[in-house]
Amino acid sequence: LVGKFPNGGTPRWAEWNGKFRDVVRRFIKGDPGMKGDFATRICGSADLYEADGRGPCHSINFITAHDGFTLRDLVSYHDKNNAENAEESGEDNNISWNCGEEGETDNPKVLALREKQIRNFMVAMFLSAGTPMMVSGDEYGRSQNGNNNTWCQDERNWFSWADCGAEEAGLMRFCRLLISLRRNHSELFARDDFRRSMQWTHDSWEDSYNFISFVLRMPRQDAMLSDSGTTAPGTPTKFASCASDAGGTAPSESGRSRVSDAARSGSASMTATATEAYKETALLVAFNAGHQPHACRLPHGREWFRLIDTQLEAPLDMAESDEDAQLIIGESYTLSPYSCVVLKSY
Image: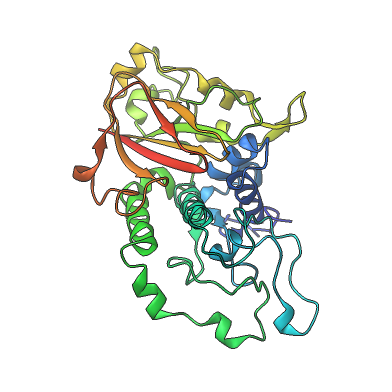
């Protein structure tokens, strides 16, 4: 029933977007054929909120909530671990992935993958159009040892200041800087309408492999619209609004999900005219939610600097400021398996 809450007049009610939660969980853990659905959700879920006059801000985007797995347990457990409750309780379908081993482990490869996945989830949530909601404790990786229904386990729900302090230079730092990045570009993410200057840059919507990339630019109504409100002559059509990009998904002939045709038109490369017309600040965001390295084409005509690469360990996983961002040399950037990147151009 998400998206169907009655407004009773002027749209004002926001809703927990459970579809955002489920789609992002499936995409990030690598379930095939999720690109179209993922694109719809990170663009604000127009299919749920636009028809009755609401906007992306009415979508409460979340990965975890007060019940269910914590973010740490979401990447550490395939099955719930609720035996201590002495009852049959808790959700069985958690859309989780333990990254190779169930529960606690000292396997460095598994632990490194879990750290990446936590950061991938955070980037997907905070850099989506909508209102992000994060559970207290996820910012430092709190675990409930796989118990996804801790109503009768008081200590499982405690906030550990010691564990939080131990992550000050790690996950806490990443989370703090990510929130700052969103706030510094609030015009792109904290929106009450679906219009965003957006260009999809990955090669195909039909490929079931979950690689997706897009470029966001600061809104420039003067450049994109004429006085009559129509597209100004010479404006590149590849910069579709987020309203059309996120207009819902439909099954392709192969049975995989895809975004609307309007969104698919944004996957072409940027023209030289567009390069000259759009010299404003831009963010390139790419997700490689699969087991293979994947190259991401960089739109030509401008320099790109790396802000985030979840493959890298702290403090290289995220730049402290624009001045610390690393210049990327070349026409593409290779993403490691199960990682995401954010690049910035000025």
